[in-house]
Image (cartoon, rainbow, N blue to C red; front, top):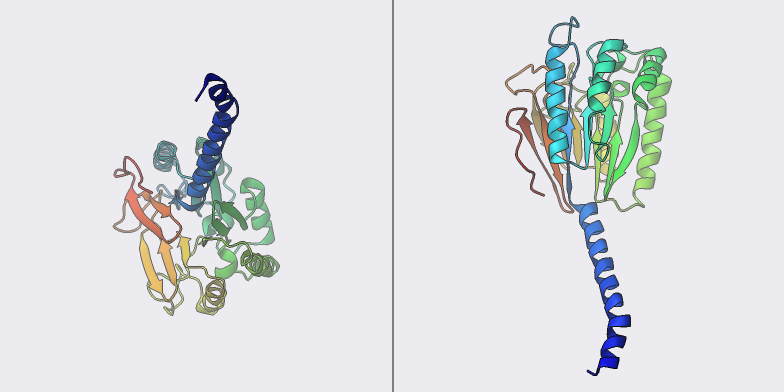
Length: 292
């Protein structure tokens, strides 16, 4: 190649070639980002539970460690599945939760989920309004890559007697959301709420820690009809895992006070195109890194 041709090649072809490589790399990176990532599920930090609302030093230590570990691991997002505080409306408990949550790296999304201690076991409309004023919407959706996340207020499913209008509004919203989700081609639709639908068996008897079977049956049928396979909850203050045709019900132990053999900790959930894997770690055994 003579010098003139070499000059023309450098002038026109090399920049184009570099641009195409860059474009391809960006597309590959975006594709990988959309299909492969991990997130952290925390549950029940429940400020005030260790000392029956007298103080919350232990909850502070646990949640600060959990947030620091999340900052080190850099998940796509963190979701806290309810009972952010132990006494709904307690200004000091709410302020301490929010103070520590604000330490999460701004590049990591944080999604709060209401629990029964955040709104009350049988909340009134005023309780719901107070929660929304402190933490934002009590049910909503979000998108991360190829995943649709659905946050539900499970108190509307468990004990809606004083808030029937709000419960009906959530269910209508959920139906509309899922009707439109079919057109979006999400790889996974994940549901996050506080109460588990069930702990061991889909048809288990009603109890404090699960959602009543009449509501359970109706909502799980809706989930199955729309290709939902994974549900993440807390409330139980220990881990539980149950499978039923087409569904995994994952109940995660507490960042705060345990009520069983599982130590305080959180769950790391790895998402790829084909499947979702998850593992619970105590706060003293968080891995150095997370494989995708």
